[in-house]
Length: 336
Ligand SMILES: Nc1ncnc2c1ncn2[C@@H]1O[C@H](COP(=O)(O)OP(=O)(O)OP(=O)(O)O)[C@@H](O)[C@H]1O
Ligand SMILES: [Mg+2]
Image (cartoon, rainbow, N blue to C red; front, side, top):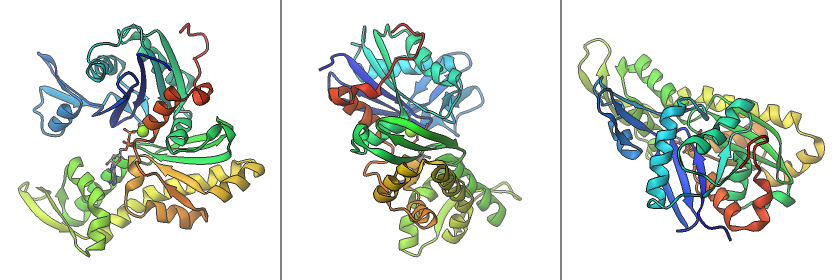
């Protein structure tokens, strides 16, 4: 058993931390609010409350973008604050397991290691785990003894499509589709059709409610600003318009899953065919995506019970269960 050990899933929208000492999970928006003069004024969920509402002197931003660290300084500040909160202050000499994306540059992968190493946490050991492998373990798959597992993680700005065999990544591709792109597509369609500007949070709400609205045969109600008059307005938005707007980004995922399947060695394809693909990530909860993926690929689609939490659940399992420890590795040339 390992003590003083943390698992970290640094998502572009949410940071998830597993604290092994307390067996507890911590989830907060991966966001920071900085006042030009006063410095950091809010972080996590409270920074998100200010998002799209703050005056010009306060900058509210996500330091991670497209799955990689875009703003190292703010990410270091945030990570230290989050680890302090998740641990109650006792984190010195701890061991960290961090999930990192596969289809990014070596420099970007290394930057996750550097982040933890240089955030002022005094880390004792730092291990990395491929995000898709953590996802698979979090989904309850015995990755080390499985050959041919396909994981599709639909995240915030990106979707990572990966094939895993015997605990390692065979192929992985990151594509530009995911939750915020769905929101942006909805915003653009509402602007074009109803001449109404809506915010990202309103678009996200339509997306999350979409399944229920369709079941009830109801339109979505949105509030925004009229393009011509500049005045606040309420409108009913037809769900068919929303479905049509999302299609382009669903196709990006479906087409790329097919490309990856074409590149998969045939022996592994047989297992993927038998088991189906595994769909996870918060973005995968959007209405119809699972159905369309099944139809487009001919594969059974296994939906995660807790999409968006499978990476951190996988890291927790790796920390708890010695059997999985070998999927974690140190980054070459780094001493810890
Ligand atoms: N019920 C839902 N229906 C549709 N979308 C949802 C639902 N719940 C969450 N989402 C979307 O999931 C997205 C966030 O997904 P997730 O938490 O997996 O991202 P992340 O792990 O922070 O980012 P990434 O892994 O891409 O770096 C958001 O765009 C959010 O709107
Ligand atoms: Mg994620």
